[in-house]
Length: 167
Image (cartoon, rainbow, N blue to C red; front, side, top):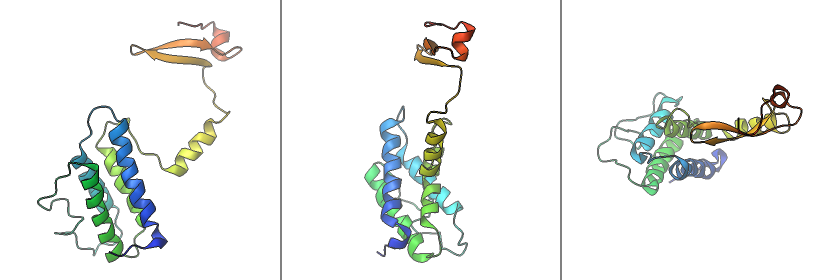
């Protein structure tokens, strides 16, 4: 097994398994690990720039008989094998980019509200919200599927319109 430190292989593989663990721990219901794994490989293969890479009967062949994922460990082991197959046979591929596509594939199997946001985008979103959030000027809580105002922020748009606690 050849691991190329230039492409941060350890970081990419860790990111993949952390994303999967996060889904399993935080997603409502029971995500299908096999479906998540299969989708991650399909997304990775679609993102390949090397059209000459052999897929049939390789670790990136999702139709290959006998691969059924039942645990995070199995998913990681199979993904690592697929990842290293691509990295070793297509050295020009950007493995960080392919890992991001694989993670998006995992998220594609979930409900439409569960999405993957790359770290750079997340940081930019946090900066946009930090001290600059403008809205209707309320603190709220969701109680029995209804948004309930806890407090209208003094002198904010809602306070000026007469919105009060409990609305």
